[in-house]
Amino acid sequence: MNKIITYKEFEAVDIRVGTIISAEKNLKLNKPSIILKIDFGEKIGIKKSSAQLIQNYKSKDLINKQIAAVVNFKSIQIGNLMSEVLVLGFPDKTNAPILIEPNKMIPNGGKLF
Image (tube, rainbow, N blue to C red):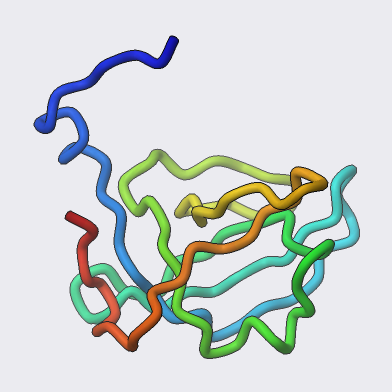
């Protein structure tokens, strides 16, 4: 059973929209990934993330795509990269991530509510 949380607990997770400005394959990891640089606007800035997206995305196709990410998790070391945000997605039929994207352009840094 899923743990029931309060709205206040939900609000503690800071989910923002950002635009991918750089995407490069990282084949040096056990599970190959794409290193993303994401622009979250003036207040948050540009953050890096490592995401296992190779199964469904080409690096060049990610540029200028808006995505959702958690921006207030503690940074973690993933191979040779310090990942600063957690990019969000849902699993496809093979359990590979499909990114969460707004269906209209939103100013970078917009907070999910």
